[in-house]
Length: 321
Image (cartoon, rainbow, N blue to C red):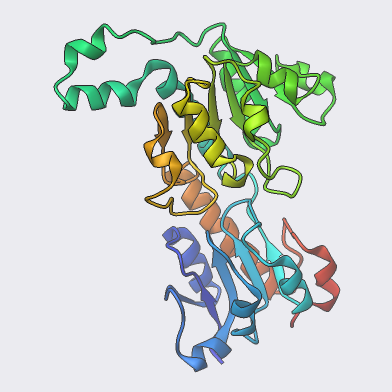
């Protein structure tokens, strides 16, 4: 029986080539309708959205789901484990791309680049020229919430630019100091002292609406919030209200609670807000690295070898063969 890897979202050709070189056919159908194909799908590479229990049950021979990225919150891990399906991800493959995107949003907010571009297109050249509000980031404080691979890269870049960096993390203060940064006593301290706050935490029950009305109110009125991690970290209605009320100077978001962002979302009308469509991890280099790592993980599992990043290790002894 021909074995198929289902990749419903576009992936870089490096991953497709690797799968085909290792004897797998690749299906890019959004939702395979051929019952025969359901029987042939042994692997899936998933980029976004939800991979539910119902979807898994459509593919009786599915052995592995490779997440094209880091976040596995879209995968029903309990269902995967119960059905003997291995779940893996590709950590580190997009870290620099995401960190650079967060920094780009910071620069845009500080230099008002998007505002200026829009003003010129609206024939308001002189009006925006003398508006002011443009910032030098040297000497300002960046608060980083979460100190994984992305947070660490962003911290190093910010320090190199002359920013003061506060970090909220469980890692020891000595480790943070080695990077030229300071560990915040707590999240409240970081929010109160930072000129920019960049979120780099996973989506968990503990981080759901981490930035709610109360925590947004702790930030300086002159501060900006950046999120390139997971949309669920922010109460979007509270953020929109804070921007409308001038309680926050600006925000830059690459991720949202529901994607694509709905046309009636309160964020759509919020001022001083930069929105990008979850593209922080979509640089050419990151896409190539993630596709290849996901494909390699798939082949590794199908060859009955444990992958580099196994999300549900308890399944390994009872996995589908």
